[in-house]
Length: 88
Image (cartoon, rainbow, N blue to C red; front, side, top):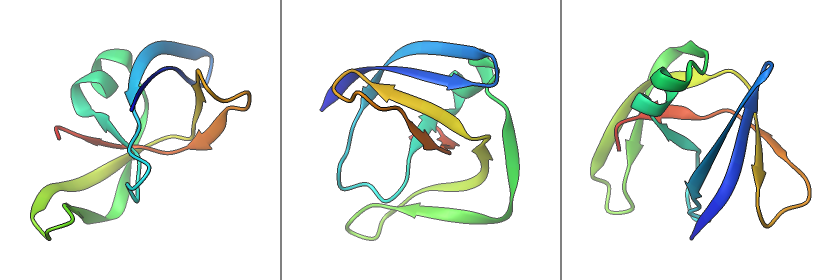
């Protein structure tokens, strides 16, 4: 499902379209978007592997964003989250 969303951090915000996968274990953002928007990231203590349901390795993740506020167009309340930048 694709929804309009607002992503906020520190004193900045970004309007975007979010692809919502209710079965996903984690939240991912395109690494180019993270870089272009200047969203701060932190290095993970150890890299994580992202796998598809069939076990296929999709990405190796080494960073996560600072805490973000995600406001979806269908929800009255924003949620706090961290996202993993990837090129998925």
